Length: 210
Image 1 (cartoon, rainbow, N blue to C red):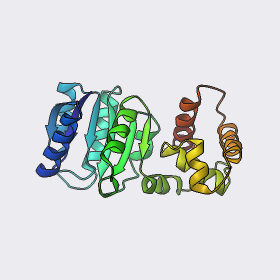
Image 2 (cartoon, helix red, strand yellow):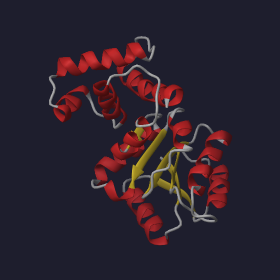
Image 3 (tube, one colour):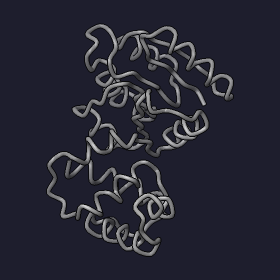
Image 4 (spheres, rainbow, N blue to C red):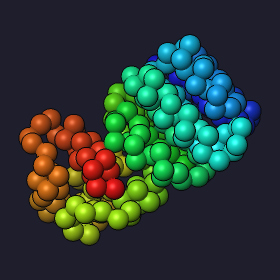
């Protein structure tokens, strides 16, 4: 796929570019600050933009704000925030639209998992670090989800299957299926392709109730 990298650390930016190129992807642009990132994405029209949250000029949430600008101007471009910091102000709006991921640099421990995540995000899915999910789902909500259902929803956001959720929560698979069904019902999601429904469940919760 065609990828643009927005990262102010030259060593990390070039290392990531090398990794992606070695995996067969085409790095079509690089940017060290938020304004340049927006311009490069506009010109290169990539499939995916990988963006650090804290970038020049302000080194606060410039990358996240640039990601929102990109999504507004070019909604077809998938966004992956790859950062050491958790930013929630702009993240809920981004994740609610799909084709969005948020991974923490220090917690990316497996290259194959990372490459699988960017493929999933570029295809319109989600890839959220558990700490990011916890921060987002921990916000006040009015949805009538039980604590266990919130746990299941969080693991769904990470991309876990029912089998994986059962293993993580020490439940049997049928119990997990029941929780998933209850979540779908409470969020008002009609029957659809299962993978799509799981993404919709996370996005609906974050968009409407977070």
